[in-house]
Length: 372
Image (tube, rainbow, N blue to C red; front, side, top):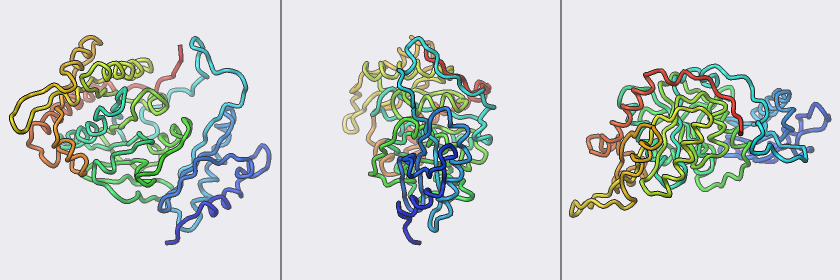
């Protein structure tokens, strides 16, 4: 199959006209963030915020035009609203622009019973490793589980779950990749591993929406969303567009990590997403030679923080080379050494999560967001 070129895509998009001006969207400079990988194409169409809803037919026409190119497997086109006025953004006391009415539960993915965000205030705390092993632990307990890798700038699920290749598409709907009984979608399947994603916030938000809406997830009990670190666009998109069943906060026990974790936790509270609990990762280190226990990143800080903030402490995961090696090799410890104490620690946390979701706390509508 011949490789698809940027020239071919640009030629196809020149056939799409902006209904307001009658000019093509390429000549108007509306196309941005073009990504091509093995027949999978993604790009954004920049429009004024107030025109967004009316231009959905134009977005769909652009997708269809590119999909008609020989060799194109799938197309993801997103409308990104760029502010056109010269005035300042809303101040700290101003309300954000009026949001759409609340959607029905999981309207973009109706087959998913509960969507849970796994988040951290900062990078490097082992959030993705925790997400992968929790997903496998939930599946081992009988749940139908998927993972949405929402860390667009640093997708790691393909490597951690040992998945290679690209998703197939039918009628522009992607089939998720699968391994170990998990359904997985990640930007890492659509771009080369070392390709930088130089995308603005609206492009990230649109991509996340489409990875949820335009993927054939099927029937799932739980979809874990591996969030990027921090409290930015991805978190706000998931909280605003998706009725999250809850959020799980991952932190190391050291003070600086807990400070950032507190910010993340408060962000979810601000947008009325239930916080299911906090996990202390890299809690202790036991020397494999002498058995001496060392608290490299302190110990017990996450438990104390949970008590202070009035949320549940879900458990501790140690700092251990086997957890790191199995994740790096694409064989997470829950499947590669299911009888180990570390795998059982993930299992115990998964049981708590399952019980919380069974309580019905995830039957909320997607919230409106106000900046106070």
